[in-house]
Length: 402
Length: 85
Image (tube, rainbow over the protein chains, first blue to last red):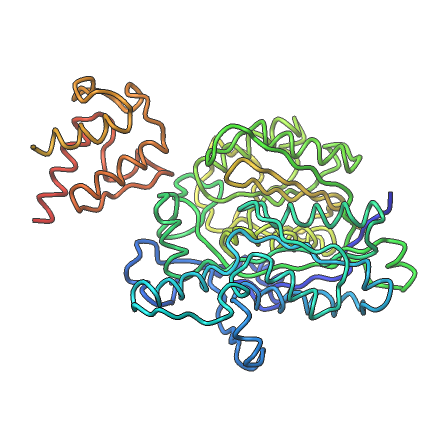
């Protein structure tokens, strides 16, 4: 068994176009959620989201690349470049042959589907661009990262709705820990903020029209976001031998399935994932100082998650901090666990706990320290990141300060 | 068919019951309709009458639409239809 560390991080999301910008926004408790802007938005009942602004594909990618890169791939490549640059790794020879890419996404090229359905159904066209399929496929982002950075080892895409990134990072972690790969590029991406993407979510009636207020009494549901988070997971000895800067250590993970309902979460499934992740990491519950919650802001998730935390951590549940940064960047669905891992890294490295913003009043069913509205300084040695997906598929990661 | 019977037909179909088994004072719980079943029923009612029902599954009791009994739902639907026309 090898120790696994994170040596590079990259992101783009509603809070910023890089890790420093995003972390600064989390520290300041800034909200990236606003009025959505895209074609036909006036036909939606839900018109807010955590949209990435000021991101132009033109200039960043050439014409040939733009015909192949859906927005979710563009986000992924942007975040991957930041992460790999920070890690200082260059993939050649044996390192390239054995290192790969595992990424999460729930929808893949949603706006490519949307644009082309509109073209053939609404506009009545009978011809689409030849690259529609390679542009929209869920593995497009992972493939383009592998091509761009010469990663020739195990590479694939994981799709488990809102837990996609955590499941992906769990796979990457397991591969480096086992010795299968010296380094893995991992995380996730999502870009569903287009007419069809938001319309589909609207149907479920769980979206908020005003704000995402996790754990707060009077919360009115989830708000979608978009973007990507990408990390370099590396064998600790490999990283140390080359003198790399280590952001934190990944020490364990677990996955579970509720096996109960396609949308309603289960306390038992969430609790099993957290408890087993702590066991895998060989830490006691009372060593955990911070949990980055799944915290969607729906009635169902937040009270179930708090009850599961109370079950797993017992009396220590009242001592630890748990916050949901979805209140700031929205729910990035398949990319959410990756962006939220940045809050865990910030807690471990900088000793700053990202707040749950938009918090108005305590909910007796969510009676934990949710770090309301204002970031807090605290020394944290172990952090946990939760993701609980529709379909009852859960994935939890455990990180440690180095 | 009047509004009341059309609503009862939709609710009965969702509950997998005969329309005669759906009473005006029945609650959704009595009929075995859970939160997902309710969201589906509301969708079907909106499609049937071409109306928009103000309903958020996160806070059903805080919504402007009363779902406490079948009669309350019918009353709310009649009002929404009257508002449209």
